[in-house]
Image (cartoon, rainbow, N blue to C red; front, side, top):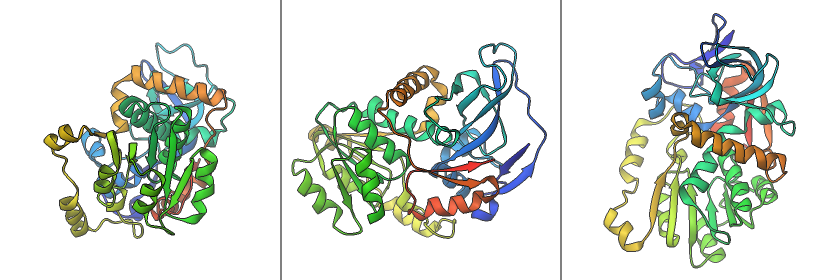
Length: 343
C-alpha cells in the first residue's frame, strides 16, 4: 500500500508518499481500499504542526486525512454485514491519505447511489462538521438569520445548505467574486463579496438587527466583529482560525501567529451573561468518541441526500501524487467546494 507520511512539521515538501506493508482488519474493523480521499484544511494545519488534535491523538510521524471512499477489501471478526466489494464511505481520525485504510465498523457507511465516489470522499468531514456546529450546538429556529463566513468552502457550503434545510435565512460571506454564484445556488438569500464591499457594512445593511447565528472559521480577523453583530440571544460558533495561517509558502510565520494569538478576543462570562449571548466551539474529532451522535448525523445527512435536499459540493480532483499541489491550492483561499485525491 501507499500512504502520505509527514515525519516532521513544515511546508509542502514534508508530504512524502511512501510504500508500506498492506493492512489487515482486526476484530470489529473494516479494511477499505480507498479510491478517493477528501482533503480538509485541518490536514494542512496538521502538516504545519499546529493542529492540537494531531498532537494529542497521534504525533509525528503522521498520515493526515479524515475521510475516504472506495470498496470493502476485507473485514475482521465480528463484521458480517459488509461483503467484500461493497461501495462505502468512511471517516477516520487521521490515516486517511492512503490507498488502504482500516477503521472501526461504526465509521463505515454504504455509499449512496446519488454520490459518486469522488463526492462521497469529500462529503463526511464537512457535512458532519456543519451538522454538529449548526444543528447540535446552535439549534437555530426557522426564520433565524445566519451569517456564514467562508461560505464557498467545504464546511461553509455545507452550512449554507443545512441552514436552508432548517428554514433559516442564510447570508454567505466570500472573498472573491467567482464564489458568489455557487453560494447563491446552495441556498443563500444574499452573498457578501468582501473583495468588493466592506463586510460589516454589508452585514448591517442586510440585517440591521444582527444575526441569530454566526459561524466563523477565520479567527482573529473576524471573531470580534462576529460577536458584535449577534442579535439578542445570538450564538457565535467557532470552528477554525484560517486567517492566522499562510496562504502561500505552506509554513506559518511564528511571530505573526503569536501576534494574532494575543489579539484573539477572550469572551468574558459576565459579558456573555449580561448580553445573553453564547460562544461555542466545534471540533470534528469529538464525534469519533460518540458513535451515537456520529450515526444520528450521518443517517440524517444521507437521508437528505436521498431526498435531494442536499446537493453534493463541487469537487476538484488531484492524482494521489499531487497531494502537495492540492494543499497549495486549498491554502490559497481561491478554491470552491471540495478537493479530493484520486488513488
